[in-house]
Length: 335
Image (cartoon, rainbow, N blue to C red):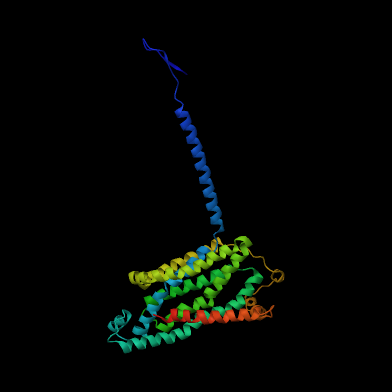
């Protein structure tokens, strides 16, 4: 529609209607369409990423609270050795715990000696037993395709251990240092500990990933395992001072419980059973402790290989023991 405006003594002026509103509406619709497509694409990619997240939250829930509670467990052992085992008075133990040992050198030395003697048997319990069990568990897991069990059991052992530490704190004067060390170390060790957990996680990732993305996914797991330690150590001192033993152990319990429920509900087995297991109509828990599997596992490292590869593998194993062993020993004995 054209508007004609007539002014006396002037030319007739024709005014065309403005098309701005139509152009603006068209541009707005185009922008809305683009944003809608981008939002849908983002949600689609987010959902696809979510579907790829499998064991990563579980690894965080296992490793982070273990490191987080480490300092609290060390302080608890020191305090129990002083108050419960050596029967020193509260004032002396307070000075030792705070590092003000100018007048308490002998008492501090006695406490450190007692804690070191406890570490001498508790640390091998926490490391050697899971290492031996894993030689059986790994082969059994490969035969049965069962990875999930060896993620559930270690975190369940940690949960039981942490509940035991809370009870040990509640009944502080009734439970000694050695009993506390046993409560801390035995349940996770019998469940396979971090060794079995790491084995199961790496095996599961290998089962569910393609060759193109396997290295990336394994790298994420390794990064979580590596970064959880400094993060946990940075937070452990702050949380121990601020919340005490109860607060730290309760936070660890929440992490373990969440990881336990997550792995039960979220994870599904992906590995097929071997023909040997499928033909076995009466599977038994004793099949885990198979001498045949144990020998086959050990033989992987020591069997004859092309060139000097067997020697290289053996040297790598010894190098790992000599490098990591002292580091772990210092980390577990330094109060």
